[in-house]
Length: 168
Image (cartoon, rainbow, N blue to C red; front, side, top):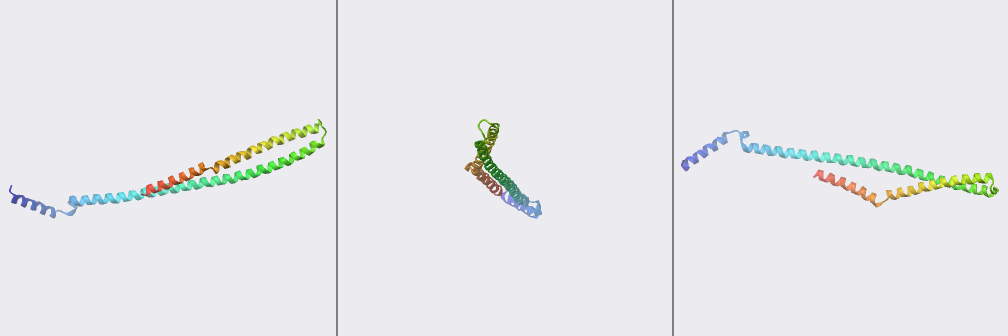
């Protein structure tokens, strides 16, 4: 074939391609597929972002619930601490009365022995109350420790980073 014949054949094929409907061309379908891909990617991105926002919101709600429960527990603990301190004061008052009664009771009398027995029981109760107060101090130390505060900040930053990463 000569170059002239090749040129004519080329023109003939180009004319046929122009006569074909646009929706039967490779270029059209390439564009449609690319466009569908763009819209699908956009939809999936928005879906992931929405899901991440929901997860962060749920995590924040759970965190708020835990904070509320901790606050309620602290309030309950504080009430018990006040009650323990009141009981300690009462025990001290009882010990003073026992000491006064013992001073008036004769040595080795049954009354003095009974008072000493009651005094020992009150002292045991006072020691238990002291143990409770020391336990309270340990709990307060743990609640206010930098480790627990750092843990809370780390959890908060993880939640923020997760939200940002999902949103991008």
